[in-house]
Amino acid sequence: MKTGKVFLVGAGPGDVRLITVKGLEAIQQAEVILYDRLANPKLLEYAPAGCELIYCGKLPDRHILRQESINELLVEKALEGKVVVRLKGGDPGVFGRVGEEAAALAHYQIPFEIVPGISSGIAAPLYAGIPVTHREHAESFAVVTAHDKSAEGKPMLDWEGLVRGIDTIAFYMGVGNLPFICENLIGHGKPASTPVILIQWGTFGRQKTLQGTLADISEKVLEANFRNPAIILVGNVISLREKISWFEKMPLYGRQILLARTGESVSGLAKELMDLGADVIEFPKWKKTKLPVELSNVKTYEKILFSSPESVSEFFEAVMDKGMDIREIRASFYGGSSKSIKALKERGFIAGLLVDMPQEGSLLIVGDNKSKTIENADYLVTSKKELDMQFIPIFQRMLEEADVNTMVFPSAATVGTFLEGLEVCTINPIELLNNLQVVCIGQQTKNAVERAGLRSDGMPESATKDALADYLVQHPVACER
Image 1 (tube, rainbow, N blue to C red):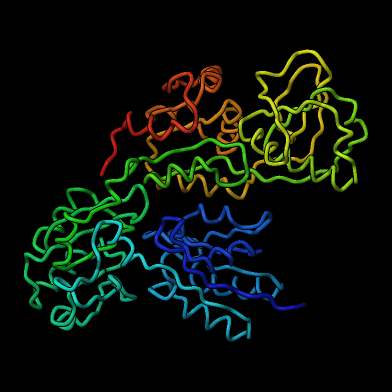
Image 2 (cartoon, one colour):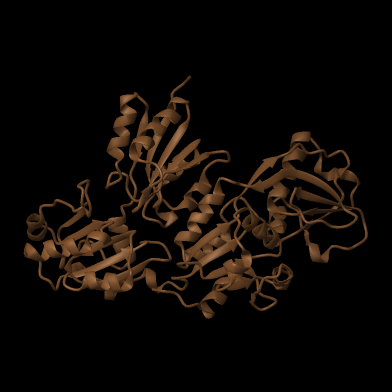
């Protein structure tokens, strides 16, 4: 059997848009992905259908997979002839143990590539408004591990060298050792008044900061119960933050949104919200299997309703495959949503909305097995859609680590699928949404939410998805900053 290949990829610090082009290309061709806790799980949605996802996440009090087991898995999967991606938060060469993994692969002569990523020690400060170097404040910068392999986990560093030779110091994952760090920096000559900032979940919309000095930051961390994952930055360059802080001023910074969806891919609405500073968790994740399409009777219908944009492409692919002349189809076309109508327009067809479709005339509904049921209609099922069970534990972990404050239902169709996904997760929807702002786009969506026994906060009845961001800005929720 042919040996596969391994890509050791830096996922960047958290914001999915900060991954490199080469890193994303590796994900898109992967057959197996071994991913860490600090690699944003949303990146896994770019993997091909059927890609095996293996969680290697580490928490301070437990290891899901130890390093030796990870090395063995990389070798095992590559020797099966598969394209394997090892996805690590930040840059794999900065405290990412990439050297150990690469050595294991080299031992078995397995081809591999190392794909650098943006390091959290640089990106998190920038998202907090702090460049790690500046001509007037800092001409040198160091990244330092805040714990080591000793019994006590206290880093054995050249403290005198750090104090004398480095202007800005970034300590990785060092909240537990912060008093030890401050004590040694002060003890070796760093002024107690030196600014210090902790940046938790840097580059995410849930990013939090805590600022102080070497003298008082440890006490502030205890009072605030501030925890990892966090970068500790020490240096006078922190003073620039007041002038150039930018990320925390974005309109939806602090918003952690749970977005119901019916499609398989990341939605345009999610991207728009992220562009404004929000964290967005889309749920549930679906996978789709195309089915054989029988078109022998399609010419007999007077109306054809497409339930989704995907159903449009699946239908016309089948028409082309069968060699059918599209002019033989005389039906009027309708779309179940504005996206479906847009997909038809891109193919040269002017379609009407479902609400404007006349009652009379024979009707064919084209879509997947989850398509809306309408009386006296025939169905052409082009694909089978089902929950992607690999993403259920991923969603549960995302919920545990986030502090969701907003729920968005973009359409009535998303309500049932969202509840179906929660049932698989054994999550009670009423308890989940109890303290959230629940936003429904359109009256039909609001009605569907209330029929399901859930409460809703209303946008205006005529409001559309385009107005959602403005609505969220004008109706803020209490966000910890």
